[in-house]
Image 1 (cartoon, helix red, strand yellow):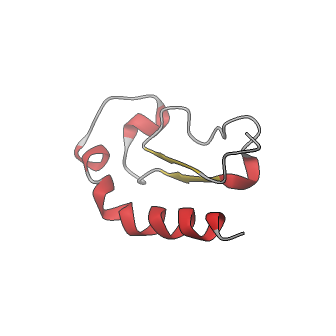
Image 2 (image 1 turned 30 degrees about the vertical axis):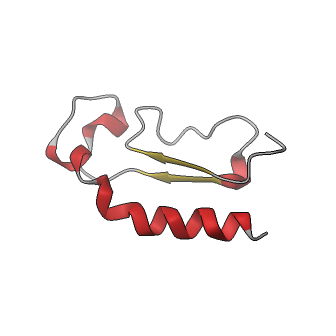
Length: 66
């Protein structure tokens, strides 16, 4: 994990579990009505994470510059 500067997860059924060792490097993106984030089935909300690409990219760039 020492060489990893950021971790981004989208619609993770393990939400809000952070990857061990990456607590301060992680951005978890889970849409409010995405049942996959609660261990459920794929819904329309699970298919819209492309709208969060800019947020994820900004997070990665910020972490890379630290």
